[in-house]
Image (cartoon, rainbow, N blue to C red; front, side, top):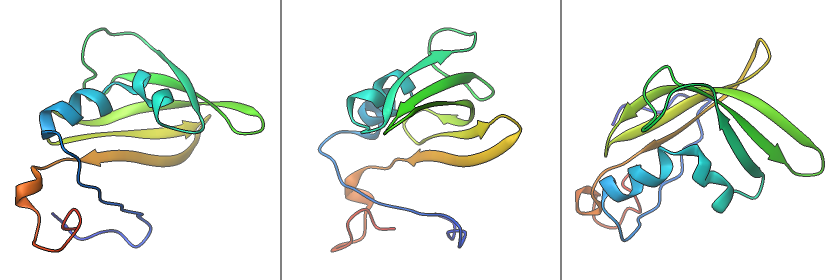
Amino acid sequence: MTSVDPAEIVESIVVAASPDEVYRLVSDPANYARWSPESTGVRRLGGAGEYAVGDRFIGHNRIWLPWSTVCTVVAADAGREFAFDVDAGPMPVARWGYRLRPAAATAPGAAGGD
């Protein structure tokens, strides 16, 4: 893995599932409302089936007040990585992403190895 940008926040977790199984979940933003405390759903902007680079969706969120953002998929490598950029109008907000690998590939004693 490449070095982390100083503005990047990275967390690692080991789960009892293969990278392909995890990818199927995280590469469909409609699933995020199942585990995110703020995501309330998504609306896909065109396309069908698995998300691909360039596909867009609107993410709906709520903590105290509701808000929505336009998201663009920037990485869709099955079983390895899924990422999307989040924009609020013309302003970039964040990049959310998931990098996946088999748990056996992690360094001993390191949760996730990153």
